[in-house]
Length: 210
Image (cartoon, rainbow, N blue to C red):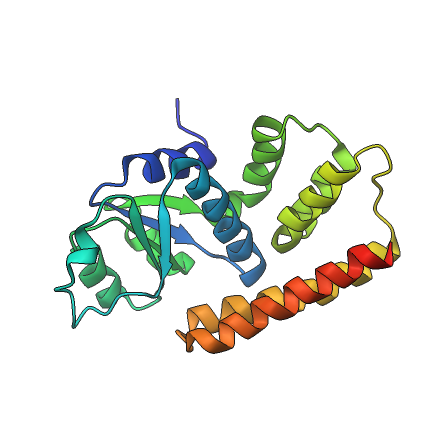
């Protein structure tokens, strides 16, 4: 029986061995969901994540061989994927469908086209939530799945999807997509930090407004 993608990621994080996990991003929105998923599962596995924190040219740091560290990349160049996969530490590579198909049998892989099934599985099995409105919304807006789950857990009895909520989420969504683009382009950490601050400030204001 084939394992669910969520369980594959969970097992990969718990082993933290010299392996490569390749994720077919499909879209920025889908990639945001898997990135958030990895962050949450990494906390449970007590694993530290590093985004674009490694250069192939300078691979002599002893830190790379510490336990419980996983490096995350955004690579669409096949040659770079192969070079990165040879490095002696666990790594997760977000890539496109072309490379997913090319390396399907070579690395551990996650197909982002299965994100609808993964989102539903994650909500039902990790949160024990069966609210179909919530599941449907998260499936249609994968990049907002975790903020929506937060809203639901804060007040599940009064949870509902309406136009106002969608408009607010759209603002947060744009910030998150900007963050994802910055990470993918390996922009400097200062730009990413200020974008993260924008998201926190907006969410804080949003809760105060209610």
